[in-house]
Length: 114
Length: 117
Image (cartoon, rainbow over all chains, first blue to last red):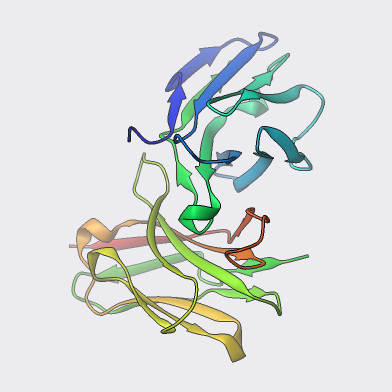
């Protein structure tokens, strides 16, 4: 298996622009998680899906952030409009009951908002 | 709410020194416990996990952890660290047990380990 796939790996954009991050979970996994990691705040859970349905989005910082999971093999995290304080590494992870809920992380997207 | 505490935020050791990183969680029910490692510039990778059975769990790269239910602890240990162990280590708890649908992990704040050669 290729593992969790994220794209792009690096994104540099200007303040006010829309940013879309993409994630493909491991095939057969039914839960998907979006995290944000910064030096100041550490690792934060933004939102997670179970069977394509958002279960907990309490970690989404504000309305500028939105996430979708249209099918079992694809999810997006969108920031519109982006701000410099959104600069971070965004990780996607997936898991299943069959794996004992162990989460498998993708390589991350390093976002820089100028 | 469930929480995970890692009291050591930064640890500096010399090669061959022994390592113990503390992890305590607050939840009285069935738990699954994990230690993840994040090498510089990389993503989180699983070091070891505990679901049930023997409370002493062996992981990759010589790491082990002991689940002590009475102390709500899951400390990570390694008898002799190497320079390549320099990384950030995260403890995580999945509450509810393997057979529930509750798959969210609660992560600790991480411990940065620096091993000097």
